[in-house]
Amino acid sequence: MADLFAESLRSFLKPVIPFLDDPDVSEIMVNGPEDIWVEKKGKLIKTQARFTVEGVNAAARNMAQFVGRPLTDERPRLDARLPDGSRIHVVLAPIARKGTTISIRKFFKDKLTVERLIEFGSMSPEMAHFIEACVILKENIIVSGGTGSGKTTLLNVLAQFIPNDERVLTIEDSAELQLNQEHLVPFESRPPDKLGKGGVDMGDLLHSALRLRPDRIVVGEVRGGECFHLLQAMNTGHGGSLATTHANTPVDTLRRLESLALMSAVDLPMIAVRAQVASAIHLVVCCARFMDGSRRTTHVSEVLPLDDRGEYRTQDIFVFTPTHKDEEGRIQGYHAPTGALPSFLDRLAPYGFADIDEAFFDPIARGLPPPAIHSAGTFRVRWVPRFRHRERGEPDSPELIASFPKISTGNRHANVSRPAAAPGREAPRSAPAAAPPARPRDATSADARSGRPAPRPVQGPHVAGARPEARTAAADLLESLEQLPGPAEDADPVERTAVHDLRGDAAED
Ligand SMILES: Nc1ncnc2c1ncn2[C@@H]1O[C@H](COP(=O)(O)OP(=O)(O)OP(=O)(O)O)[C@@H](O)[C@H]1O
Ligand SMILES: [Mg+2]
Image (cartoon, rainbow, N blue to C red; front, side):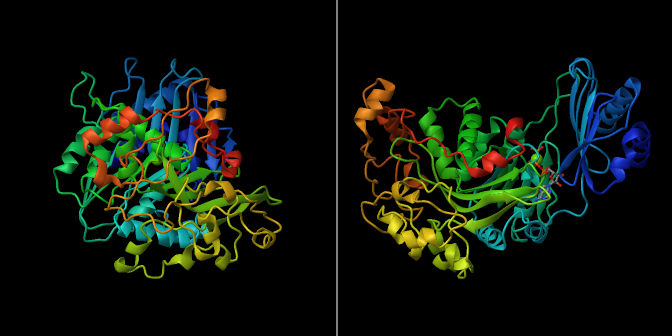
């Protein structure tokens, strides 16, 4: 039966069949009957292919029939998969003003492996090894990026690191993940039928998943109120969960999750949700599509506890630094550790990753300049031995800067890393840490800018410093809420990274 449908669908899609069969084409975009584009080797190309108006409508309706989902004037949009696994989205005319619009994301049977991503230069072997360790350590990881930046592909790759003896539940809107684990329980959501009945959304599936004894929950894309329940699950013992979401930087990712969680019906104050986000997510892996069509992992960042104003803090562990465009227009750059040490460094050796020691995170030991632009939290960042001066708030030495004349690192870290109250390590995740020193505020300048009195710094240890388990009590959170000034007027702006400027996807989000 499926074969019959596949055959009839191919005849409806005749004008674009050559592209469906071309392995170099990854996406086909039909913007009405006469405007058809393809993405070939990462580049968008306009084609000469044409449908008739009836032809494109018939193709769209045939796809809807295949998946048994309504596509009518009342429901003119459709998310579905073709018989070969390709992902499609359809919007009928006249909503689509150029005519019925179809996008086909082709499904590749040879899924990308971590080795292939390293080969393409999408990530470095060290990054991959570190991420593998984080998956084994059951850190909760969010993969983020813009549209078509390779999030799902990267999630697939990360999920391959999950040990085979674990029970993995996957939840997706349209099934794209290809996991190899033996004990796999995949779920796919379902929209309501034409009578508005029978819908099963991601939130429902998450609810079921939590009752089905998962070792890991993998969520294709978090894009609604189910985010709150996912955060809860991550905070209540379902470690090692993986998911993707749309965002460009690590801090944006946390903000995005916060706003998605606030969409759920649960009426919680924002600071409570923020604390949930910061404690649930341990690692953010960002990817981006660049102007030359390449996809790269741009940040591997650890999420630190909220700062004393209740703002998110992340420290980049690895970043991609673009350097130049080569003669063929390809963007060149390098992946390097930043020199900052993950707070869970001590937990790596017992899990069999003794090779990931302090030296592993030293860019200079790898012959790479310390990346010029990256975020390093705001205080109490631990650095590799060569950068210990940054822990004391001292600038990089002229010799260090001069070592890489072509790619100067500048002296950015002189102000980023402020002296820690008690030099030493961030407290382990399970133990409440001492309150960090209150952030010195420049009251005069804050007043001058906002015209309001500078807010009181938080005194208690509730929000800052402590890791999740120690501070989820509602009372603590509410007390923090009262004390917090809210988003501060003089909050450090999220750094616009060099990667932003070269990204091809920024405008689409
Ligand atoms: N590292 C990579 N190198 C080259 N191509 C890649 C890479 N990662 C993904 N791709 C290709 O990019 C396209 C988009 O990938 P993917 O579906 O993973 O993106 P996405 O971010 O999940 O998109 P969406 O936001 O639409 O869900 C696919 O055709 C995929 O094969
Ligand atoms: Mg995706």
